[in-house]
Length: 132
Image (cartoon, rainbow, N blue to C red; front, side, top):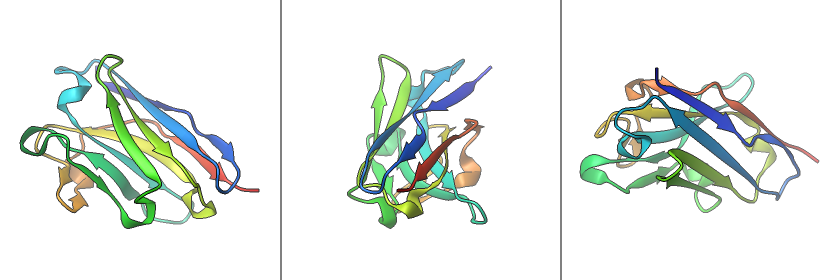
């Protein structure tokens, strides 16, 4: 059974950094062959896609929402079958529950946007709170 598990959330002061991890199990093929996205949802707000890494025709293509460009970096660790989201210069508006999600190659991550409905597997989320 496919499963994604996020970790690394917590409380951090404005301007600080966190690294979120998303570990995979039960995926065939391995996670490196799936499009991976990070979403977040703040209280009272809609879910927002913040970063995406594609595979297939656009292998290696990464997309970031404007509000996190230059501050967030998504990456893959093929050997560990996991992905990470490095978040720097965090702001209070980054406070949310963060989720990783996986879509088959060619789906989910498109140039310039995410298609949330194309992601088949989701983690349970990890809370990130940015506050002084």
